[in-house]
Length: 434
Ligand code: HSE
Image 1 (tube, rainbow, N blue to C red):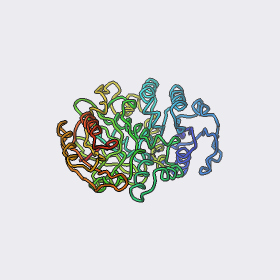
Image 2 (cartoon, rainbow, N blue to C red; image 1 turned 90 degrees about the horizontal axis):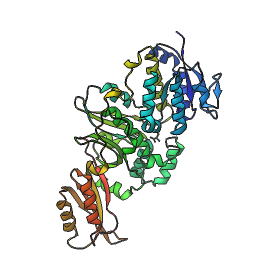
Image 3 (cartoon, rainbow, N blue to C red; image 1 turned 135 degrees about the horizontal axis):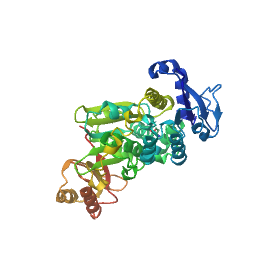
Image 4 (cartoon, rainbow, N blue to C red; image 1 turned 90 degrees about the vertical axis):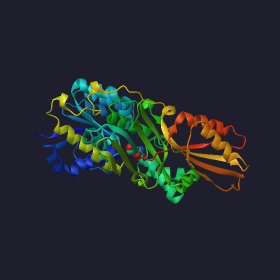
């Protein structure tokens, strides 16, 4: 049988890795796919010194690939929203299957892209868009398809996890670690996507859709980054038996779905709390399987290429299948997606870590306790540190039981209005993940 011809758009870190893996493991991949896979064309603005592209035709124009009648599968690895959307829609229009690693594209334009793909009977595969080399999309969409998923929580941005790990373990400064993540090729072109949680929110949006069978709704995800975290909170969390991780959480509730990305205290003895450096991990809780955990490299040249190539193999295996028998893009049949709403953050429920800087006067603790109890907020633990030399203030750290966020907002406003409380109250959400 003739080989399937693929075109790679973008020969950066992931594109280069994809080319190399397809070439190095060509024989093994063909045995799995049932046919050889040939890179028939590459679109790249410049050569990748880590790739020996040999006689493979290279063009500078990505649209040459999608308009090339020889190409069966377009691998989109250029990143970004606008041009990638145009490229993918054109590829679909031309009847080509698409494999992409582009989380921003899928989270923001996925509904439109999948509708177009259905119309044309082609596949759009995106395993590499979430958690790099971890086959978590396949696990949720196919491996857990018997389950009603209750919740999932993940460390899905390697750069952010690397920064938090280095801050905690080595006391390094935020900026310094970010520079290293950029040099290692993990950070996004715009690193605010990593540190402000946008990249994680893209990935969480995708995970939530395939877990719950809802349309992609990136604009409704609550997003909070790690740039305001201080080493004081990292250390206090540690003293209370927690680790701070930048977590994406999606949870089913009776009134809607929670979809939120934020720094989170997790008990230090949970496996996921011990996922360090650039590694990613996603925990999924289903009613039948219980909790399962998926761990591995969330970024990097060949780790991400592993997911891209696996998608290519899946597409090749399904080339002769009727389009209506393809695995649905969002795991659920497109006409059966749920319109259960995404909850605003004020309606989400969590436990909270609160740090209050107070003047060292009698009765402050009693006032704090009253404000919380009046709003039905139950305190789980409290820690009061000695007066700090530089400002004469007392740090008071509380962990609450689970409560709806609106009540905590109200309590924080009342706490900040107290005469003996100085500055803003620090709030970090807490998840037990049990
Ligand atoms: N910037 C992303 C990260 C790359 O650090 O996880 C993988 O999506």
